[in-house]
Amino acid sequence: MQDARTEWLATLDRYHRDRERPATAEYWSPSLDTASRDELAAIQSAKLRVAVRFVYECIPLYRRHFQRAGLEPGDIRSIEDLPKIPVMTKQLMAEDLAEHPPWGTYTAVDDDIWLRHGWQIFASSGTTGQPRAFRYTAYDRVMWSWTNARAMWAIGFRPGRDSALLAFGYGPHVWLWGVHYGLNLMGIPIVTAGGLDSRARVRFIDTYQPTILACTPSYALYLGSLMREMGLDPAASSVRHIFCGGEPAFGVPATRRRIEELWNASLGEFYGCTEASPSAGGYTCAAAIATKEGPSQTHLMEDTQIWEVVDPQTFQPLPDGQRGLTVVTNLCSEASPQLRFLVGDFTVLDRSPCACGRTHARALGGFQGRADDMLNIRGVTLFPSAIEDAVRRVPDLGDEFQIVVTTERELDVLTVLVEPRPGVDPVQHAALVQRVETEIISRCELRPVVQLVPPGTLPKTEFKAKRVRDLRGQLSQEERR
Image (cartoon, rainbow, N blue to C red; front, side, top):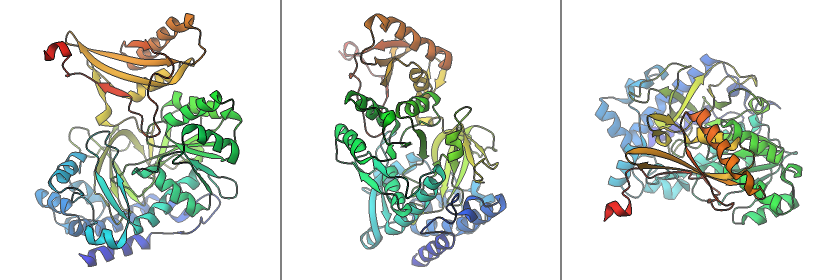
């Protein structure tokens, strides 16, 4: 088992290039970032062969997973053999955790490794089930810093010019911890604001003049509105980059536009999941950020991960250009080198070179929402992000909204709660409701019930906003009696 770990870490070290600093002004690691498709395939295959042996030896859940499928590590020789491995799901991990609390057996970290080489615990958000804990090692921290630095370099962050305010609570969530360590490696100073309330964060922006604000999209909107309430103009602030994660933003046109106009800043984002960290996974490059019209695109770092799109029903791989669910194989972690993990977001992959010169796959249109989040209302399937795009297009609305789905007389009812901006004349409220209804119908082909509630009614959050309440199947009090 120790031999398998040693071989895996040595393989990761072999492809850990430009570790401490960028090689050029444009690319952190040009030999990786602009590698040919054949070179990327060779790197992936070389890593995958070793990863499979390591995972089989050191992750009990995967060993059982292989045995049920009748697979041996030697059956996987290159990326061409990857589809032989059955997809790993959150449900399988959740069942494993229930049988083996509190850590489960889905990572390569046991108690001995944790106490000798452990770094930090992270956990899934729990938005789609029971949170699952992941123990990451000091080696993971090094790799995490490097992958995130490469991605943030592609976004356009630079030492000597930028500083960053990280507006999050430093809880067990992967994204902004990775950002923190990536910025450290880049030499970009950080204004830490984890334990501060929102008003204090506004004062920090005004006083310490960071150029990067890192937070969720919902919080970027809230903090900008609060800044205005405090007599300050976010558009005139020092912030020139809004850096988001945790929720869709870049791929929701109206949300992206609202954030960029509020702050007079460019919006970039990361995409990923706790299970397959440490890695940026997906990120927006400077060329994509500069393109304000047309579909969005998100880079995927293919020398550290293998990305697939699969059919939602069969989990069979789909060719590039077809829409399906994301599956990732992580080739960049000691603790959690997951094989064919179902992340579960809908997207379309394209492997043609980007205008920025990077050759790795891109998710066209970004990520359109997770299968877990999809709503089926009166036969119409839609993602909450589609409703968000509609709501954000109405300028006199506030930044918060909520989706409630109920059943009345055996029919699904979609209710969207929205707030007017403070100061909007109540005479305009009826027209505002009509505008929201029209926008949702035109984008979702579904007539909603729109309810306008007073400003400040809907909850605000620093982390992932929970905007959907699906109450179908819940009995009313009268029915319970």
